[in-house]
Amino acid sequence: MSVYKEIFEKIQDARNLLKEIVHTTRLDHSSTFSRLSGGEVYLKLENLQKTGSFKVRGAAYAMSQLTEEQKKAGVIAASAGNHAQGVAYAASRLGIKSTIVMPIFSPVAKIQATQGYGANVALHGEVFDDALAHALKLSEEKGMTFLHPFDNNDVIAGQGTIGTEIFEELQDVDVVAVPVGGGGLSAGIAIALKNLRPEVEIYGVEASSAASMRESLKKGKVTDVTGLDTICDGIAVKRVGRLPFRIAKDLFDGSVTVEELEVTRTLFLLLERAKIVVEPAGCVALSAFQHGKIDIKGKKSVAVLSGGNIDMSFMSRVIEKELYRLGRSVRVRGVIMDRVGVLTKVIELVAESRVSVIEISQDRSDPDIAPNKAELRMTLEVPDESAVDRLLALFKRNDFEFRLFED
Image (tube, rainbow, N blue to C red; front, side):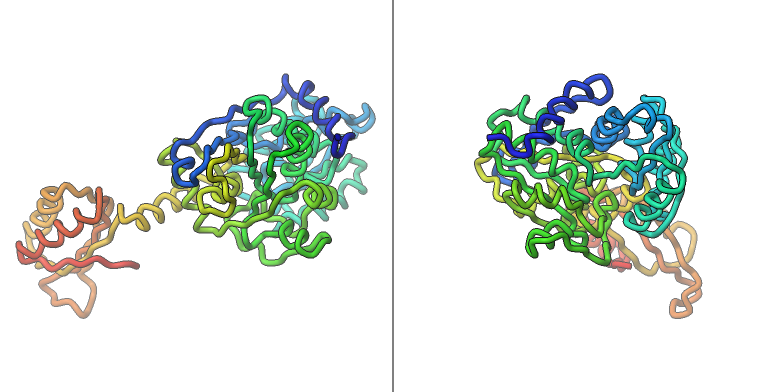
């Protein structure tokens, strides 16, 4: 028996219509995450989609359904970044003028990319919901068609084509986990897969501090959350959509959350082991597998990697922090005699230990250190913890006192 028959029919229509506009992204089996979770983990690589996110699917299909009069008037949307780029790209392909309202703290890379696809960008409010209210106001004032990022049948149908692609490639899939912001992506995938394979389990995954879907499902009604203190800006939404909530209530098998540091550890592992670049919001579903939030032992499971539009400076901070957490970058400091040749000797000992220097600094200004001495600080890249122990022991044998420290 079909569930949400009208939207499922739209999904099937969208699957055919979008073939000329979007990529059919592949499933990639991950031995690393399979080993960590105990299941067979496949990654749905929507981070490799045009515009770097699944959002182009829903935007393109929704705009394809507009009347000629609506297309002529143009479209307006609100977005934290990925919906913005999807709308801008699809509008450009269809010859439609687009305006995107984005929160003022949206990543610069996403703002520039949206403008690059031809949209007029207006920055307003601190979070998505502020931008949404402003976009609705402008829509009324200027007669543009408002394109909701998730509470829209056609948008949901476009996102649901991901579900049909998963089934086409892995018909015996057991579990699918999907990032949840407003809920349009998870709603569309749930409808597609529950019609194609009713026994499949569908889980929504949110950041713990932006878990409107989890709270709404607990309380049985759409519920706002406050704070939104999360690095997962792509799913930092105060309130899930009413239609996605209803679909989730009917079709989800569970709703879970992940913590910030769990997300960054998944992101780092994807970079290092799989060579895959994903934004924080895009990897929450996989993080739920990795950290045991969803039991997939012995099951064929798909994590939807919903986007790859990560800010480069943020990614560098994630890498730096994870290297320190894993003990592969360390800081040492000690006091040395401030005379010619001493620093050279220290560097020679570091090289002898087969340790790499990332950064080095010498401070002569500390009033607690004698005028003929200086404090030396080094950031080192090490292969393992034993290398640090060997280096500190070598320093001591050569009459240098160095120790590990944290800022």
